[in-house]
Image 1 (spheres, rainbow over the protein chains, first blue to last red):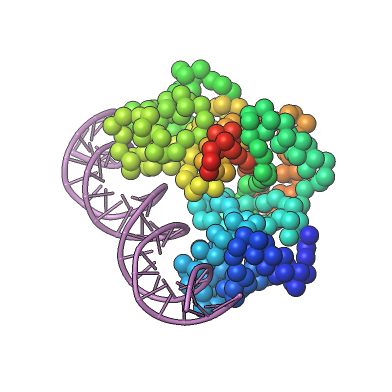
Image 2 (image 1 turned 30 degrees about the horizontal axis):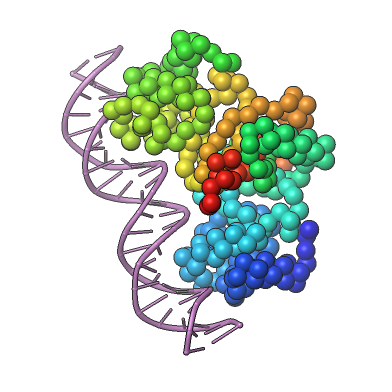
Length: 151
Length: 151
DNA sequence: ATGAGTGCAAAGGCTTTGCATTAGG
DNA sequence: CCTAATGCAAAGCCTTTGCACTCAT
């Protein structure tokens, strides 16, 4: 986890390749931007962070990167998808989300809680016939900015 | 928690009233449908479950019910909003989500894990200047149906 | 009567798709 | 060369909004 830039790109390239996909400059730029951002970002953000990337290409490439396990996509209450590098590249973490502005901050969780949740996932999955892929713990609240603002 | 139907409607009515809203028949029908569904449902589902309810009214009323704290809205990876009755009406629980079909099942979590997460929420919130409103724990995987399907 | 609530249809915003062009292997 | 990838514009889908009508108080 927390791979160096070079290592990151190598891993990304390998995963795409084993998916029968190329690691093009657009895709590299997206991975780069996600690494630099170091927090979940929307497609709009990514278009700002990269340059000369068509919106449709961003969506298409993010879908491919997700399929290859390089990025992770999720949606918060503001209905816009956010992307971040896959957890096995950056380390397992959870999210602190502002219910007002939709902002997301990465957080780390004590091992005790993490273990409890992991065990739970196994048990619950078995009980319901689900194959658990991952879990997601969100703490939802109001960020200092939005608390202060006169709404 | 797990209020009787009568109690449920009474509580819903009160909350709307203290929000300066009426408990109209459309709103009652939505609450009724959510209670019967007993799982998070999409607006499309709600339109099927109720009858003669305009789509726009569904959205508008759900927003008002959410504002009044009667229902809770959230989004899974399939980008469609789901609604359920507020947790203080049905009991605190979490979700088991199918990453393929977007289906959601309510689950309950052992007190030990729950306590750990609650404490965590307090700590993390303080550390980041957030006022935590609630937390959300999702177990994401593939339901038995989708595992079997030849994709 | 008077404003909230409703239905219908149109508009919005994020995302996906079609198609001709470009580029990587 | 030949298919994958790209950009542009159009289309889609969920959701929101405008407006006239209806209902409750």
